Image 1: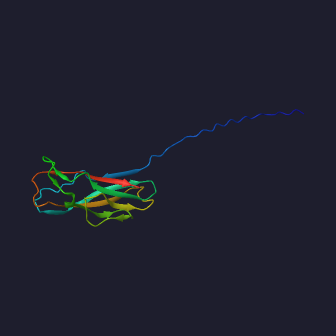
Image 2: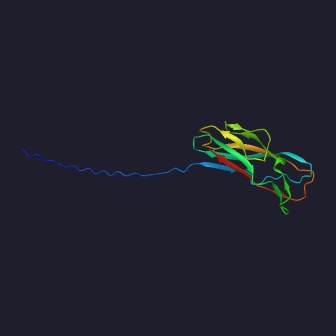
Image 3: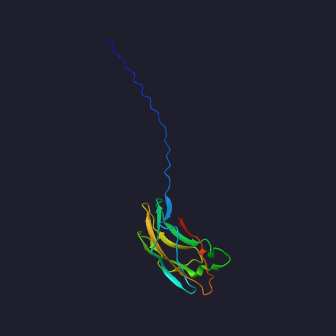
Length: 157
């Protein structure tokens, strides 16, 4: 009796394929400017813009996060930057959100950086919208002309 022995060789190669998924932690706004229009000294203009500024926050980190707001500097006259409108004459407030976190809805001035919205863990993977409105009171002796500043939003964990 003759027996055949077949040798089957199996070669397996093992290699790792490292992949790093990019984190999503983002802020977008639906407007690039906030225009109060022509105002007179002592005038107060509220609810600007009337449809609000939408700030979309997205985070896939799964941990609590906060949206903060501040001014880069006080509103400064375009032609005479030493002429400013103090930050305590400019306010913001939260009007609405699509999130389940805590939205600050009372008026806050821009004298310091403040929290606008606090999100719980797990919120924001598909993005949530925060609607903000603004208010400005021109001081009695405001030099005529255009004034500018930047509103800065920060997303922090």
